[in-house]
Length: 379
Image 1 (cartoon, one colour):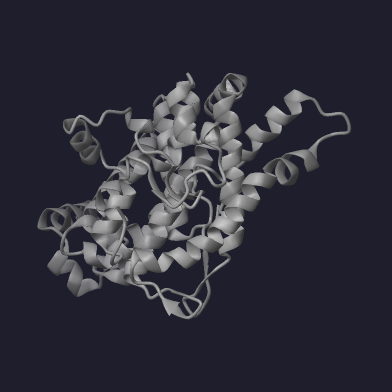
Image 2 (image 1 turned 135 degrees about the vertical axis):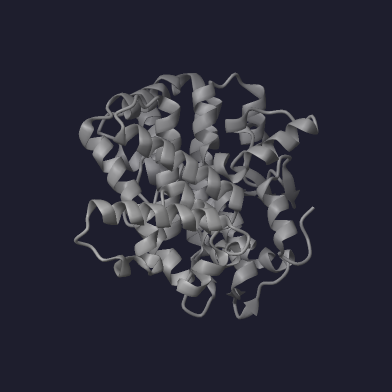
């Protein structure tokens, strides 16, 4: 299915991959009865576990793309429609999110492996061979490396269950965070892809952990239910303030990015007239309220951006006249719009003391994590 030049068409085909694709012997590492697809289709796994498992992929498909699939009679629930591991290279499963990110990067910047540039999908095979070695090592050694070494002196079945659960749910940003999309291959200053085997090991660990959970899901149901309940019910004022501060930092970083990409001249040429009019009206209103400020202070893009709300910043970025300079940062326009909406909804509820339901909280938090990763904001 995948061959030839790595371009937008190939990347989108991979991003929306619904059916499994195998390159080489599918079961050379993972036995068929422990493959995630088999387990998901064979066992009655609770909705909450399925949604947590598929959570890294929810934002990879837009609402319209999901509707298009439904129109083609390809049916599935929105939150579990795309699965994390649908591409298999000689037995090693590839994590959808990170591989999509690297494919996209390869269309924007030159990448090499052992001094050979990567232009076609087949150029990735030597990289995936090294990845396979790591994946197999991680898959076969998960229990020894990640579970047993942390046991107390006299462990029992519950210790194993708890440690496996902790492995897929612990939140160590950019190191071990399932929903955040863990780091992939490293790129050195020469644009060469490195650390391939170590990334394969990490993915082998994750794949084995989820094989254990999905094949024994009834033992993990309560743990996942409690995780969501605890995460949501313990939303104190301090935690709300922290979420609000996170959103504030994201907004400030987005403004900084816009100032780097759009100067005063471009602002007048590319920002929609109705947005410029709204901002001008807000500035006039502000100056009437605070006459000690001078109108000349608010003629630059950086100052005017203070009077944009989140969705207006989004509108500025996705405008077809501006999108080309932001695409390298945000990748997919529909996903970006959805992230801004979720961020705005959560912020409005926090600032206006409205009830925050579980869905709004979880989707808003996922958007915060996504923006922090994309914009390089330390948590």
